[in-house]
Length: 582
Ligand SMILES: [Zn+2]
Image (cartoon, rainbow, N blue to C red; front, top):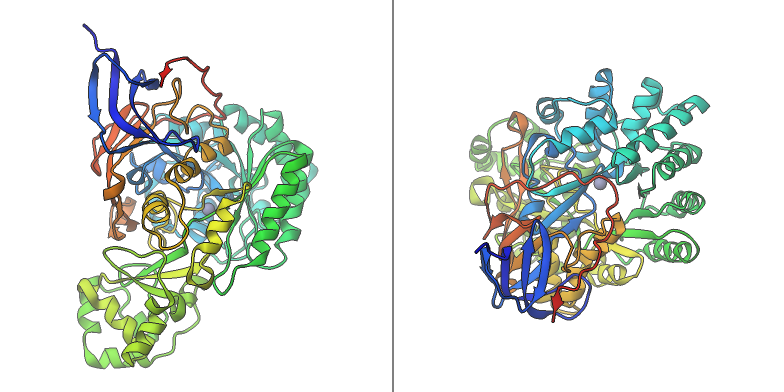
């Protein structure tokens, strides 16, 4: 007798992504889809006993930069180790298509500058087997991968493709340029782009310290592209305004107006400051709510923990990286640097030395009040007393001395978390308020970017472990947190075939031991092309993750299955079947 299901998850606590109360049931999967939920008889080729375990839809991460990694790697790590089963790439207007041969270096410099990916990694890792955006989608489609991806059409490549050097120099687009951008946007959507992404951020600079090509692109240019997107079938506009820099309303308002005029939904990045809750964030949400009442939905993407830079001697930045004496040894291998830094004379000199001018990120490397040790059990909501400033004061040493010794721990692998923003008054209360707003979604994990500086793509695990289980103070219920990681995200992207555990939906599923769920410390791996390094981060507690009914990881160990596919455009909801017997 052939078994009834390909996969049967028995007696799990189903948290179905709708926000409804959890319930215990069996879940059967056939042909990559959820076949039935209830008390299920009949056998299966694969059975998972899930007593006491939580069963959720796979998570959808709407904000990643795996544009390169999706070409050179089969794994979208770290996201796929944190329950993510669909990742959206092409965010923030940066990416690699469309692109002519002569412009490869231009786009690499944009990506290097904005997303902090070393140029050599991309030069080595990208085979550039595409020119147009549809070609790029085809290149993504033929490569095996652990999880699903969908891609925005990014503004910067589009502009450089149409305008060449004029585009890179940020010249005003001519009527011909606009007509071509519009036609190409239509073509991209027809081929399966999920939307259009653009960016206007002062500190997003290319590797040559220039503004990116699309910076200050005229509103008319964005509108023409979005019109083309609408003609191709429509999609989501993704935008990064200069937030929380005051005056952002002037930047956000025209995009909301374009969204209204073209009938296309808009999503944008939102963060709050550290010193106190930034009131402008509330203004942005109010603007979104007002716009959504009469036009397409406008949503703010909010990150659910401090936006964190990770510093260390192995990484792009540390508090001494701009000191002249450190610069002299910066290129030495880690073990040599550690040995040199243990020399009391160099220690004394480095601690006393003033840093020189440098990259904006490294300039923050002395932000002692917002810098914290990042230990084996990383704490992403530390108190003021955990800061380097407070620890140094308590020990009667200078912050430089305090941090010097922390960096040298673990043979030079000691790490620091710098809360760049989104952490008002040393608490995530303000962030929780933002996330609870009906026009906010969780986002901004930036997986695949800032490889040696940020490791925020692990946020789904943080949301479940910290916000649901561990936090002192207000928490989220499990069902609300799961909804925020699944159906909210799928709906935002128009991917209505996933994000819920219902018959007919895609069998993207996590089986989680919530009691054991734990985020491990980030660590450095050298697995990028050209031996480039990146921060990786694992988690305990993911018993199994399934993509289209195929297990991609069990207890944190990848299975070697690569069922991930390119998702082309919005997906309709499955026709409801009556197979839920509960
Ligand atoms: Zn981004």
